[in-house]
Structure formats: structure tokens, C-alpha cells
Amino acid sequence: MNRRSCIMLLGGAAAWPLAARAQRGGKVYRVGILEPIPAARNAANLEALRKGLRDFGYFEGNNLIMEYRSADGRAERFPDLASELVGLKVDLILARGTPATTAVQNATGTIPVVMMTMGGPGAIVASFARPTGNITGVITFSTELTAKRVQVLKELVPSLTRVALLHNMGNPAVPAEWDETKIAARLLGLEAELLDVRSEGDLSHAFELVVRRHIDGLVVGADGLTQMHQQMIVEWVARNRVPTVFPAREFVEAGGLIAYAVNYPDLYFQLAAFIGKIFNGAKPGDLPVQQPTKFELAINLRTASALGLEVPPTLLARADKVIE
Image 1 (cartoon, rainbow, N blue to C red):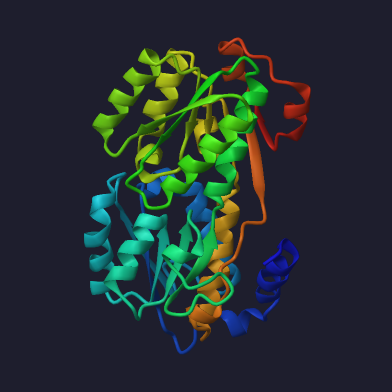
Image 2 (spheres, rainbow, N blue to C red):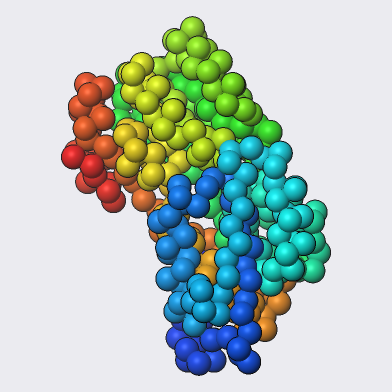
């Protein structure tokens, strides 16, 4: 589905009369939210979700209850947390990431699920156009954006020769990102390394390999583990002066160098449209999976200066957010 169609679909929903979209008969809806990180770390995205839901007439503490569950960066916790939400008899489950969505998929075939995943449709739904079953939602284009991140890092650091992908290969969506990294690196004349991190302990080992193998640039993938240990990663690459491109603006706001990704608050706002439609009677399997409409390039000039990097004017001109 193209960008125009996506905007028309979601924009059309936003134009419905508020009374038609609001809860009926005094019902209080219960939404389960399955996430890789705690709610406090996810505040901006959750506020965007709440704003979208308010536009549809659903107000937390009034006709809406949110049951938030976090795996705290440990994907092995998702199955139990998914079962817990199913046991609460929630009306709908929102799941972020392929591991979380897969856990919910295994836990229920009847409760509507709105996902935000990285991988292609084959892993979760039959197709983007007709998902069928009880799952629909949005994708984050992480696979496609991986190559762009390698390109952005090379543009920022022309002397780059050896790049590594820091990611969790236990996540079923990640192998495709590694393939994209290798292709992009080869086209740019770079050597590519994989730093497979599946636990907090793996991060320390990966950092040692960066030094030992003389890796001069990092691409950090979007996974519950990397999100949960965002500050650790940002601080380590800063101390060791390793130019790094990140998978979300939040890393740059925490002191990271540069990020290229979808606009996550905008995606959470899109999720609200799915929830509103489903609560209004739509079946998830009839709602096409949507693509993101906003992408953003974020640059931290303070970090660039500390690394002795001069941001090219062409790159700076394309930036959506600049921290000075």
C-alpha cells in the first residue's frame, strides 16, 4: 500500500463522528500492551497512543484500562506475559516487536491483536493487504532501513572501513537485517562483522570484540535487549570513540551520535486508529497492515564534536532533529 492510500485510510477513520467512535453502552475496554521495555522508558510513545485513542473517544481511567506488561529486554519472558494478558480477558492486545507478537499469536487465536513488528508479513500474517485471522497492525521497515543506516554512517564518517551490526540474532526478524548490512557494506567497500547479543552478558563480550577486531563503526539494531540497555551502549561507544548509528531517535536524545528510523510516536498514533476501528466492530483480519508514513534522521552535534567529526552540510540539511 502506498503512502497516499495509507493516509487516506487512517485519515478517513479520524474523520468519523466522535460519538460513533466512542464506547457504547457504558462498556469499559481493557487493552493489554506487551512491550520489550518498561512504561517509563516508553512514555513518549504511550502518550502518542493515548492521544490517538482520545481522538476515538477512549479515555484511560474512564472507558479504557491499559494493562502494560514489559519483558524488560528479556524475550524469553514474552510467552508468560502474553498468557497473563490473555488470562485477564482483555479486549485487545497491542504487541511491539516480532518476538512479542509471536508470543501473543501462540497464546490466542481469538483476541484481536494490533502489532508493530520489524519483519515481513510471512512470519505473522498471510499478507499485508489481507492479514486474515486476529492480527493486524503496522510494520517498522527495520530490514529496509538497515542498509540506509550503513550508508548514513559512511556519509558521516568517510574514513570508515570496518562496520559491525550489534543485534540479537535470536529475534526471528534480525537475520534479514544482517543480510542487508552485508550487502550495503559490500557496495560501500566496507568489511562487515556481526556482533550477536542475546543477553546483557553478551554486550560486554561484543564491546571487547569491537576493540579486538578494530571495528571503527557500529550499527545498532532495534531489539528489546538493545532498547533496554540503551544507556549502557550509548555510554560505551562514547567512551571508546566508536561512531555509531542507532535505530531510534531516543538513542540520540540519550547522547548517541546519529539515528535513522521511523517516527515511533507517529506509529503509536497509527495504532490507535486500528484499536478504534476494532472496538467499533471491524475484524483485524480485514484491516490491511499499514506502512509507516514518517521517517526521521536525528543527529547529536555535541556527540559529533566530542568524536572529532564534522557533520557534512548535506547530511545536516536532511536532519529532522538536531541536538546542539
